[in-house]
Length: 591
Image (tube, rainbow, N blue to C red):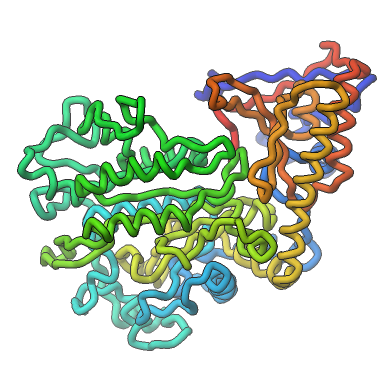
């Protein structure tokens, strides 16, 4: 254990017969009570530049575009703190922000993803969203937290309509103004009443209680889990406030962290405790930890349907996290097909919508109608370019708001390219959670982060000013061509050396190509990501993969092929006379 975390140690060997990999001299970067001299700082930064220049040249293994061009026009803003604290549609008192740019960027993606815009609090079908600071993971966290509260009967913003004394002040002013402009700080302050969202246990119908996502009836189980044995007579009613989360084997690892963080029970956790040995999947007495995936990494629809129908018929509301561009295989879930099948099933069984009782902050009970599902799309990779590929690849599934979905998350630092993690979360205004106004910032804060990086909105805007729809379409098609080129070259290498490299590229619109894990030197040189995958026949294959990002040219692929060819010929050796220590956390290690 190093620094409290389990680590794998990878030794990268090199000598004169292989291109040396630049190393970081950590001693150059050490800090002390004294400031570094200008020369010492310059020497450290030169070392850093040599290291990053080398790895950028060969960077193949991750979905992180390195073709960036922001410094010339935006470099001056590094000497400012641009903070978009709070809701993007409530200006607030922190004037060094880019919220007006953020709203323009959000409207661009609302149009791209086919949800009505601009944002209008009076029209609840219009979009609401914000530019996140953590990347797609923050969007997933927000979407699943939104799903949990919506499905478990927590009062959300729309439930406070016709209760003027409890409507969030900032949104109340926006509705009254009915304009694209946001209320001024003086207007917010003048009419401000703070209504805190209670952080205590919250009793709802059939004595079902909710405390920040912990779902209990009466008493928790001895095991300390979410559930326990329910009185049969009350089970069906209590289930109406106990949503169930579904996601596949190939879902980003952050979703597993998120469901624990917000106490959102999965079908496996709930099923194995409350419905032991009733798993509807053939040959599986116990519920699997995830919905099974197909070989290409997309969610297995037959398994998903059986699991969803099992819980839906027991009156549990359903939350599904779909993927559009999975982390390792670049797969696309058939979101459109799945949503149609599941919503048709819910309508046929008259459980598409349900009536619930919510409790407002003043204790008033209110009868409301909500859908019995929440479909979130983790489009960290694919949501940025999917609709640009659709005209030339009509077989690509539809993932956006043309389907009956509730939310989308996208990363800005992957296909688009950003110097730091960023992205977008988007939903419809009618699903907006209920937040209190924060007098300190002079606005409501409907976001997770509070302070948000205003530079990210500027970066996304700058990118969109340079990339027309035509250029983004050409870029997306070019990325697919590079991935196909890599697949073709790796298959040719298989034939040349009569080796099974387990080369895979599916679906054909995927931006990633998988192949047999090479030696540690090649992994380090090309920054390859590796993962052990269990095949359908039960065998374990250690894979590496490459991602066709904008900075990846055919010359980069050729360099990888030549490195593999030289290794197969045995013309390059890596004796252990010099070693670089690379520390990597156990697990997939993807961001």
